[in-house]
Length: 253
Image (cartoon, rainbow, N blue to C red; front, side, top):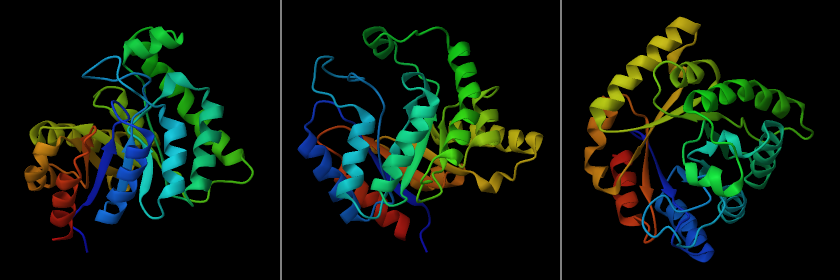
């Protein structure tokens, strides 16, 4: 039995489609439990004009070339797609993946995406309100689709907002993702437990995931002590497959 689950986020910037798909296959061969990408339209760091690929079409391609790993966006920006359409896209990729898709979602934050693709950036409070409005729509549409998803199509909510985001996790999500360091994650994990108590949710129903840098792999025990159950390495090309192999080895004990 594994101590924890191990995954990798393959960031689709300054790379090629061939390298992304090769890395997804390699991560699966190394024993990763999950492979993720992000949902942006431009690089988040480094050369702002570097190559970049859209996340959902990339996830469909990753689903077609893998067989075992869970797949998802860490995380989808709620603003970029009509919630009914997003539900249908997620269900469709779940069929390509044979039931392995996770609908990771958050309220959005990268202003360049909004400005250059014509979305209203608004305010952080407004984007969170939109996410709260749209989550039940997504769930309702998934339930109405024919055929239904192959798998459970779990919802992962990413973020660390104590007043709204973590309440939405307690109310709607099967998985939650945030960031380190371990002491920060531990504090947020406790806030999520408090929200679960307030809304009548069993906190053990929510898988706790944390996105880490390759250099933090050696801190895996500190993250477990903080409440993490699933550690995900964030990596751009050249992808940190050696760090992933180390993390998988630690997970397997």
